[in-house]
Image 1 (cartoon, rainbow, N blue to C red):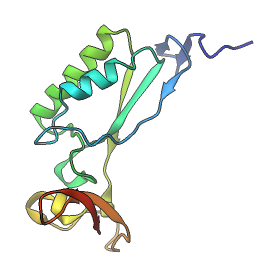
Image 2 (image 1 turned 90 degrees about the vertical axis):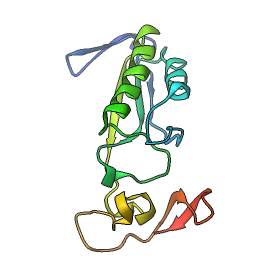
Image 3 (image 1 turned 180 degrees about the vertical axis):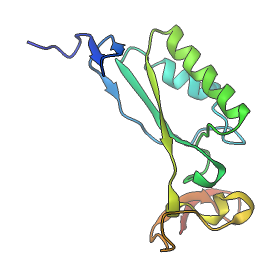
Image 4 (image 1 turned 60 degrees about the vertical axis):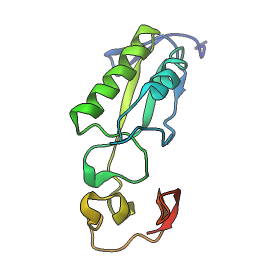
Length: 144
């Protein structure tokens, strides 16, 4: 009988120490410039006993940002921040995968470079709220 704590070979190439997978959660804790930070490194390292950690959604470009304070991976500072996170997880014996993210039309102009309109596969406006900074500078849900 297979046990949750049995090791597992994922895709024939990644050895997991058990079958526990931490699902991604948007944390909105990145530093200025959407840089992963020490708080994030601690958060993920504390969970390294799971078989696999899947990170929060991570922006692949300035135009892919869907929420305030989400980490990116498109600048050297962001990549250095993620290196700090992965090194801490690996030191704790964990395995971590980065979840790549581009929100398309779900973004808001306040999150886009120079206030540009969000990029997506269609010109149709998304009918939803996004988590961004309001006119008062505070994080809030803003109509898209």
